Length: 311
Image (cartoon, rainbow, N blue to C red):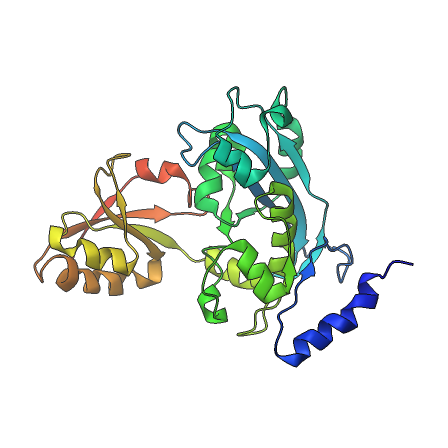
């Protein structure tokens, strides 16, 4: 008679206890959530997409997974529904490296199309959309399914303080291994979504809160995009080390360095910029408000910018 997972767990624990081995379990979607949903809960969806490439202007979604779940205002997941997944024919052959990465082949996609009505039925009731790299997924999904532009978004990669958990990388596979003790097949949209539910339900080692609670706290903070307009050329490496990114002419912003940050940190950042990016001289930066319905969207590049003098 084959051994069950329960039979094997004592052996795995002995290996862990020896201090000489690190043992992970295969991930299986959880169905035994702790409580039933109630009127106090809120509904969100996790999304993950596979695409033909990295550029949302010219590449297309080829797989979309959506996992709805319910949570309490303090970030406890009380119920998750099974993922729903669709594939879509991009109308052209896949690059071989995309096939190697995702396991999807041209034959898997021929004649396939995402069910727009089914996606709308899942997403419309949600107050929040979460992706592990929302800055990647949101532009693709808004282009293919405009209803995503109307939603508040959060990001499990950016909005959870993983550095406080001593995580050396924010890759989903690593976080799941280290925090949940599980392994899974990465770069499959369905499994990426299902495992993300597990990760967000797991309590952080630093403060005991569910990871979702930390995400919600950060996602609710007012945020801005700060453009270091006219910063000195020689400050480019300093800005990069500080977390600034360079925009190459897209949108009304044109070329320039920018950083997204909490609105509460804006005054301190302006104080830092003056000596480090403007040689101690005066200058004018540009600030864009980042509400949750535009955060992580490519529409930010065409959003209004307000000039602000350095102190």
